[in-house]
Length: 311
Image 1 (spheres, rainbow, N blue to C red):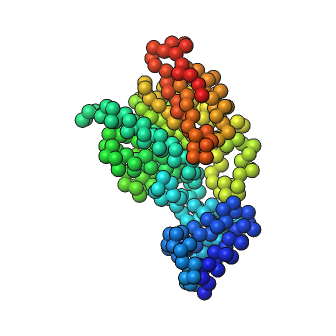
Image 2 (spheres, one colour; image 1 turned 90 degrees about the vertical axis):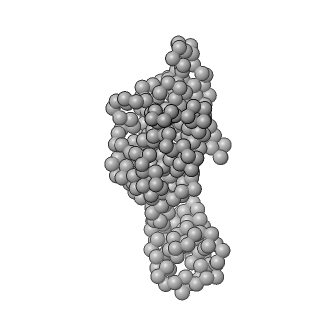
Image 3 (cartoon, rainbow, N blue to C red; image 1 turned 135 degrees about the horizontal axis):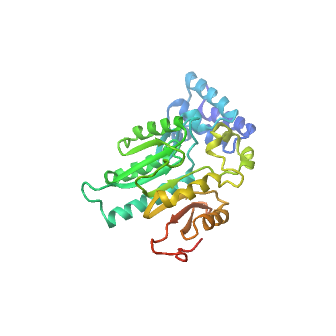
């Protein structure tokens, strides 16, 4: 039987040869998964002998990773915002950059509720997560608001046009005990008619240009292409949502849309064309790249020249 250190070395060499961008991290996660321990345990005890059963599980998972399959799909879950989300081929794997959408949404909800608590029996604050996928934004926001004692004043709805993704999202909502306040509906972006506009609209829609899909790391080829492909300029799906925002967003509402790190200028141009009087600010992620666009509708009496200005 091999030790942790021996398996780590062999695994790192193999994944480096197979083209993994993060061979050490991948191997540590997979070995931890095989022995039923956290990655930190693997790192802390290199001389421990691994059982033959665990070594066999590790070998099987390593073969899958050598073929390019994402670690999240192999382990069956992905960490996001400090939570473990079930992850499989039904939906896109959550990315760390998307956590900024949750942070901004939580801050906005808290600001609104602290400034004007919802009256007993009154309508809740309505939040929509468009293109929810595995439900990470909606569920993570629900968990955060529950910890702050605010979830009872908020209704969160996640939409997606892929039934299988919605099934995964519901599993995650139930797993994190927010299934009573976070619900999911099948829709192409938004329901055909939005009877009650949303106070907050959140979205991490496909924004990768079609011509660079093939240049992404091989792991991306295991994910649903429709969840990545944003059309010729990466903004095709986002455009469709922008067109519907005036009807879907309540007066005084706000939308937070994730964009690509190289799309600030092109996104700003699209907003200027489609929503010329809307306010636009773009928040940078931890890497300093433009990441989340904040969109504000103009006041009802703004008139033709009543925009908030652009980015």
